[in-house]
Every structure is written in structure tokens, then in C-alpha cells.
Image 1: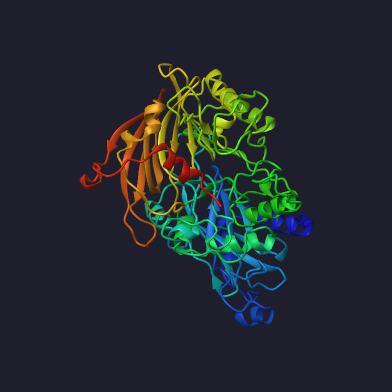
Image 2: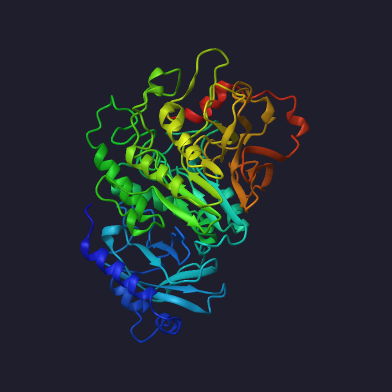
Length: 560
């Protein structure tokens, strides 16, 4: 499980050297030559068929480049986690193009896919022009990967044009088809943020929805490196997910299901149940996550540790502070939704001290028009009790009240121009104003939160009148709710951030359409969300039953 030094040096140096060559030399290097391996040569080494079954991906763009990713797998669902690949390294050629027809090569090189890292490839491309579209693909002998679309950020001193950014979360393979990924790919945004629960750890028919699951996980509950590799491969083999990865660069962070439901630092979900192998499980999950995501070398895991929180700048328009609210948090003080006095303990943290300091420093250093926190769990207070008790989710920021207060006060003190929190996890669309004091509903708003529903987790869901949700009456700062599957597509310019809450009517059957349920706008220097569009509710639903607070809690928290 330790880092293979030779792999690191060979991959890193070859990629680093390749990005520095001029375009003419890169074009020559990309052309097949006499030394290119034939299918017969590869077959003799155990590569018998197309290894690009898991698609391609791009991530973490800056103004000079981005990360390119693929993983070789002849048989993605192989139980040993090696994807049907021989236990030997394979050189993988990569090319970056200036045109969608893949004719003008601007960068090219060779990286080595080794069995130690699941035959994954991570190439950090640099030396490109800012604020430009690019395309890329990989090649092993005669086998050529799908073509992916990439993009560089604007120059650090430039705003660039309006930024089209989408964010997504929670894709439970068994609960439905990844229709939203397909629609998202068709949007061709500049940037996609995945805020966690990219895959789920459960074995078949463990986490079920009413009416039964429509697809099934292969293999046992994920605990070993082989298990996690197999599960990632099952998700990556989905054509809709592949299309979304190929459509735009991604910024990824995990939540809990990439390892274990509701884990906290070195503590599993159920600490009272002996799990002597939990740290080995964490190490395996982290390693598989890196192997399967377009992450830079800075995120290579070191045993049970992995640097995932980071800052990505989109010129002067936006700074994305990507957070990790799992790896460093204190264990939940209580389970589920509770009125839990320990939640207010000032010593408790959801980010850990080092990440909190890093975030507050970033606020003070920022000169961006928009400071956007890409993170996992609900930030605003959500009390589900209309009486004097405060009953909130202990897995969200409500379970770490002082931590939330310090960070909110931090962006206020730093005079951050437009703080916006992006969230996943709760399998429903929400929008809210953020406060320093949620017990004073007349107090000023100091930020905004947008929450995306799940891609598929929870099954189809149902539409309802958002104004009738009981949480909105108890918490006046909560402004919108919808319990259908989908994603959020934003357009960010200097004057406003506009967020379209996209929904698909069903995920239990493939091929559903997509529409905008509501649009909320955040104006420059005006904290809080403003509704500019709300799709009329189907008249047939107006007389239907209303969603209750208890049902909302169940949909969020019901796990095996």
C-alpha cells in the first residue's frame, strides 16, 4: 500500500518533461511510429482487448493546464480489483488538442500505468493558454480512448467570460439510472463539482428503496482495496457517468460513502461494534479514490492520510475552496437528528484546526468576485422542531455549531465579497440564506447556500409545493425545497450568480427528460438567495399529501 517511488518518479518526470515540448515536437511524438506496439505485441504481454472501458476524465484546472486521467481495465468487474490487467506496467500515450476534431496536437507524452496503482494514469498538463477549450485522449498500441473535453481557467488577473458551473452529489447505482449525468454532459459546462458520495459501499440489496432497487452492486461491502477498485469500476463503466466526465473538468471531494456511512476521522459509523480493520479499510478507500479520480500529485495518499482540501482559482471571477469535512472532524456527539447540547461545544470541529486556519487565511487573501465553498453536508441550521427544543442533524454543521460560527465570522471579518456554500448529501434541492445567529430571524444574511439533490439516491422522489415544507416555516432562512433527483447548473458573472435547480421526473427507468424546477439568484454584494423562477406545480399534485418533517429526516438518514 506504500507509494512506489519508481512509479512516482517515472510517471511524474515523463509527464513533466512532455508538457514542456513545443507543439511541433508534440505533434511528431503523438504520431504512431515504428516503435509503437502492435496488437500482437500487446497480446503477448496479456493485453488482449480495448483497455479504455472506464472512460477518461479531466480535473483541477488552472490557467495553464489540468489533470488528465484514465485507468486501464480489460475486465472492469474482476473481483481481484485489477480489471483483468496483467501484473505489469504499460506505457500510455496521451495527446492534448486545440480542436474538437483532434487534428492540432499541442501537448503529448507518455505516462506509465502500473499494477501498484490499479493501472491508473494521472497526467498534469501545463504550458497551455488560459481560458481556452482543449480536447484530449489516450492510446495504448492500436487502442484509442474516447475523446474528452478540457478547459483552462482564465489568467489570475482576468475575469474571463461568464462561468458555467454545475455541482452534483450522491449517485447510488442501485437506486436508479444516472440520467442526470447524461443531461449534465449535454449542458457542456465549463466546470463540474462533485461534492461526495460518488459511489456507495453497500453490498447488494442492503440499502434498498421502496419498490426495490433497479440495479445491483457487484461484490461484497467494500472493505479491501480490491473491493473498492471493483466498485469504482462498476460506477465508472456506466456510460452516462463516462459522458459527464468527458464533457468538462471536474473538482472532486468525498463525503462518507466513499469509505463508510457517517465515518469521522478514525472512527467508523458504529464505533461500539469492534472493527479492528477500520484503518486498513480507510487506507484502501483513499487509495482507490485517488486511483479513480482526476487529482493532482498533491493528493497521492500516504497510508491513512490524503490531502484533499485545496483551492482552485477561476481567474478573478471565483475561488473554489474545496473542503474535506470527514477526515479531520470530531466524532458526531449524538446520532441522527437530536437536541444535543454537546453540538455547541466550542472545542468540536468539523474541519480540524489546520483546515480551518487554511480556510480563514484564504478568505483574507482572496480578491475573487465570488468565494465558493465546495463541501459535503448542510451548512445552514435546520431545526425540525417547532417547539423550544432544537432538533438538528448531528452529521451536518448543526452538530458542530462553534465550528460553523468561526468560519462564518471568518468570512465576515475578512469582508469576503460574495461567500457562497455549495452542498450535497441530503438527496434534495435546497436554497437558504446564511446567518451569524440563526436564533434571530430578523438578523442580516451574511452568505448563501445552494444544495443539490442526488443523482439517483433515494429513487424517483416526488414533486411538492416547496412553500409547504415544514422546515421552511420553522427556519425562515430556508427558502426552497424539492425532493426530485437532479443537479444544479449555475451561471456566474460579475453581477450575479444564477442557479437553475434541474430535476428529472424519474430515475427508476432510463431516458427521462430534464427541466428547471426553480431558479435562484445571488446578486453581487447582496447576501442571500432570491427566487426569479418557479415552475408551476402539476395541478394533480396540489391535493396530494404534504411532505412531513419526519419523512424528510427518514429520506436523509435511513441506512442499513
